[in-house]
Length: 329
Image (cartoon, rainbow, N blue to C red; front, side, top):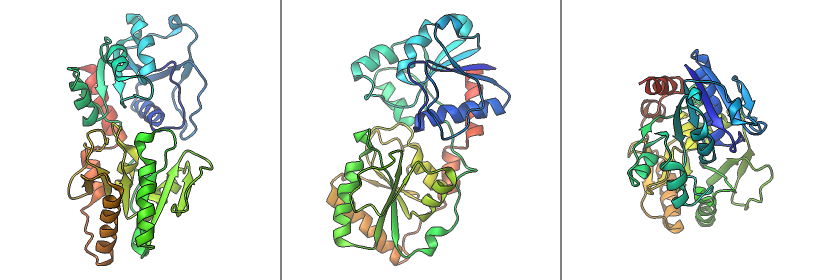
């Protein structure tokens, strides 16, 4: 099958959304499909090597023939629907509720009401689209089961380490809430550490952050996750949140907020995660401190997170095979 991923007016940068497209394209290519990425700008993504052709398109007439063309970010929908039928059947793989790009009214008009077949990457977005009477099919990107695995590092530490994502761009990632919670924790319990990673090279971090890594490679990130006893992900506008899944591959459970758009409802449960109903920093801090005391008493018992997340999400090859079956159907 010949597949085009459309990134015109969107581009590839160092972010989770771009990584999904790059890794999906690479896996599809490995599976024997002809994959092309069309774009309007140079690649800024550096996390992985892109195995497929990347074409910078100046004129839509230059887009090659294909069986399928898939819009990616919201800004790619307009060019997708303008392409002739020779470029393939038109899909949109929606992987975020991009209110940072346009208002909800514009999302409905310019994205949801456009003539594309909608795919989403998780149950969060499927429910969101259903609010507007738009049907969609869940196609997950899968996770890197070969890159993230348990090394027993956390068992060697008496210090209770909480991992979290630092994100300066989107407030909905709730980095400020993480800081507020740990200011309270640090006043009460000094043996709970906070470590974070993000894309910012030299962010202005408060002294409550014990360790920060900028854009770790997969080896560094695997070690990072393995030092964490829990992963704190208080995001409130995500579709399929990636870092908690990677952390779970290393045996690390997740703390999430009971929010409809937390991006983790595809895999949250009472045996492998802690879902907090109260968003108050004082109460969140108290919950984390209680987890630390359970850890000290060896009462923090978590079922096998790795096998669980692989069963719920699956690896990239499994999910790309599901994508191909869907496109053929």
